[in-house]
Length: 471
Image 1 (cartoon, rainbow, N blue to C red):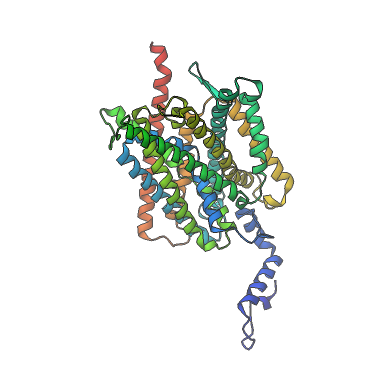
Image 2: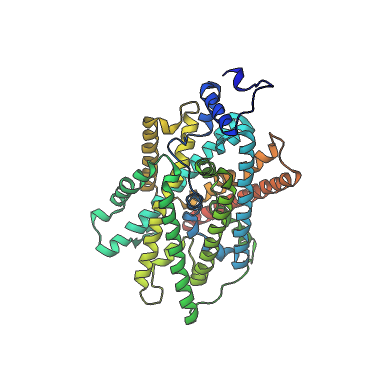
């Protein structure tokens, strides 16, 4: 770097803006001191890439948001009632928009290009590593859940001594090639692995658009069936408020916290999407559009799902589509719903996998060259993480209880506690008193709800495991 590049003579003519940018870029290439910041904050390069479109960014962020949680939302209506349930869906969406806004504001102030970079800027290397561990734990758990659901839908499941036939078994009978293990092998090698090998998240924009469309297919079918049965008089408008009769019913209200939190956690992908945007100043609009789109899907799915099944709504509403719906073509509609949802999860998988690989690489190799430039490291991490998810899906019978605990811990930290802590730390002095007040409220609410949710889930598990011994 030369002094001439930064200090001009008083009599020298002023350089045009375009030329000044060129000098700045050339100087950056000559300055090795800038490399560690670049390596830590981002593994993406804009070389030979013009930038992602607004629509593609919205689809990728929406797909990050809409995952397995959509199937548990109708059950939250059964616990909370339609009025309180819909209000909380909107409330969590607003909190999510606020928390993501905090991350983007502090990433801009500190020059960070990743969530881990913002945490490192506020709390040092310890904060960065804690965030990366939370993302790894949360995302690997989510991916295992996705694979378990796909296996259950396509190949069937056996729980409590009852076998629920999968779609392939119902269509073709029981064979070795439609068994759970073989179906997951084919899905992993034929779908997950190719999609996980993309080095840019924008490359997944078309599959993300299809995933959002499949979520709309599920919503459309559910709404149509619910309206038909309501016109037939076989369903009634469900209750508006929760049914609180004793202290246990009060504790039960907090069991929906992990579902609502995980339904909106997308913070680990926001920076990756922003880094690839053609116009990075539009990231806030991308976030608001995605949250609005997903909130509409969530509210309508919750309403029509609860309207259709009422108090018989199961924790995973997809299980309700395993029986006769009492309308013509019930069996065919059930199959369409389950197939569309299984395909949806297959396409969500790589979008959740992308930040998982990125954060694990940042945790294990914080000083290495960017991941996209090291094909060996990229391949080993990809293969290793897919293998872990595959083994977990095959050898863990059901991790819904564990999923609830991760939703009440790591997901809450990623979505609400860490962004609020960054604002309260205020390393750059840019947080207003109003934002600090909201951050304190968000941390207090998140911690309280998480502790009560963990207690409620632990009590429910203990009660369920202890009941056979009392009999």
